[in-house]
Image (cartoon, rainbow, N blue to C red; front, top):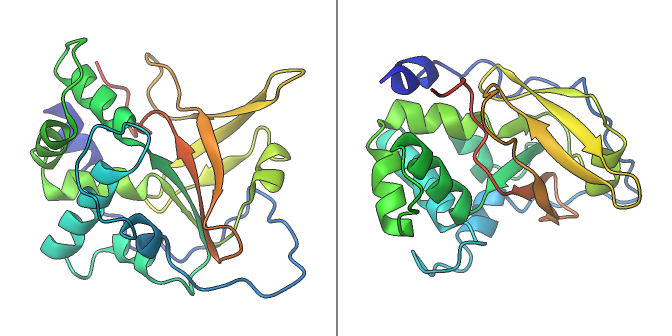
Amino acid sequence: MRFIRTVAVTATAVVLSALASAPAEAHTKPLGTRSLAAVLTAHGSGFDRNGRDYDILTAAVLAVLKAKPASPVGVLTDGRTALTAFLPNDRAFETLVADLQHTRRLPGEKAAFTAVAGLGIDTVEAVLLYHVVPGATVTRTAAFKSDGARLTTAAGSKIKVDVYGYRHRKIRLIDADTSDRNPRVISFNINKGNRQIAHGIDRVLRPIDLP
């Protein structure tokens, strides 16, 4: 219950705030206006057994917007607004639910979404906003130049960029949970060439330190 009470916070005023912590890559031509919501809903396959796509995330975004049409999560549908989002894949949400239920067994995608939705729409909204960094289009190239940057999310709290590795450089994001492994960026430049860009991650960013 502490998870629900803590992350169900208001997060509206900062959605259009500028990103000051991370550099944006210079572009030689104007960026397009295809939204991330359009990308997420493009395949429309629903829940499946592919843990690497974003069915649970898509369902969560749609559930929030259905319940709260004026939610700041709606920024994902406005391709004119620059932002960078970190997208947890389906396996990331299954892992989160297993952790919350204190089990090693991963649920299926539908069961994972049901568990996430059961936290309450305000909590789902707050968690989604913790994955959105408004104000700049941060590409893979810019991200690798952002070691140590603290990014202000649309939820009003921060995540830290950690670039590590010597021969094969990687990126992980430091969230508020100190007891579990931090999410790693596993895919880059989703929707590249547009004002809204995303990078896939293998864990859900956690805005509090879960027990």
